[in-house]
Amino acid sequence: MTIHANTEKIRRFIIDNVETHPADIAALTAKTFGITRQAVNRHLLRLAKEGVIRAEGATRAKRYGLKPLLERHFKIAIKPGLREDHIWREDIEPLLKGVKDNVLNICFHGFTEMLNNVFDHAEAQEAEIRLIRYPNKIEMVVHDYGVGIFNKIAREFHLDDERHAILELSKGKLTTAPRGHTGYGIFFTSRMFDLYVISSGKLLLLCGDGHDFLVEKSADEKVTKGTLISMSINPGSTRTAKGVYDGFADVDYGFTKTVVPVALAMHGAETLVSRSQAKRLMYRLDQFKEVLLDFKGIPFIGQAFADEIFRVFANAHPDIDIMCGNANEDVDRIIQITRASAASIAGKGGVKR
Image (cartoon, rainbow, N blue to C red):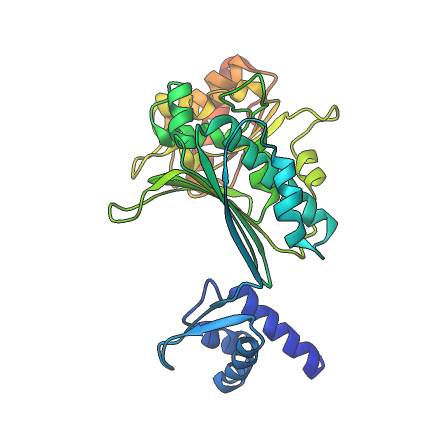
């Protein structure tokens, strides 16, 4: 490898990792490439002079972060006749010159979908819009001060609480305005971006790397008024909106597949052992033909929980293909035992893995 090529590789590594390692990026880079801290510091200094990264603090306590290439922040008053595509063309698209078509299309999709949700669902008077371009990502933020998305879903669907609303939102095909919306918007948008975050009240839903995570803010953290949605994507991404749609559609392009993060069915430190928890997990999944239950982060499930899914629900919906992913040995053992029991009773095969 030439010196120039290695330099570019080191610079790209710093840019891609500095936000998650603000205090130890020099040590991490030195270890990764087998070079000295002094050599890394020269790269850091040059990136800082070029305006790519920023540095704060004294030498031993220095922290680094990415410096925005461009940042815009404005508010819009929500009133009848306002069109999200008009705001995109007038205020957002001109800030994305030079962005590849596939990434630009994803940004268009995400921005217009989320802003339209504010118009139709948020019951808000105004919205704040932010667009920030970094060397390695484009970030768009839409923040309204309305009723809050999780609160509204829980209220409209008479759900247990806002955490249950997050579980339902992650499944897709959920809307509080069925006459004007399909319920597809958030599900597909969250899978187009590298990181998609919804913050409302004390709860955050983080979607990224093929998984959804629920985060509950601590008592001393600031509550998010209304709903704040943040979407970010690497400008070099090869992902396409069509590719995301095709991943969850059948041959007739219907929304027939979904992935359900089983961890969203857990509240706090509880374990998944009861039939009521399983019923909450499987609620509305009869709307799909293929369901992948993602057991990532689930250490254990109880027999009653498994039986409700893999025997009771499966027998009641024989045309639905229920699959499992990321199950550890203990969880997989319970699933296999339940499948075998269901097969011996019904005389047919169990759930696919």
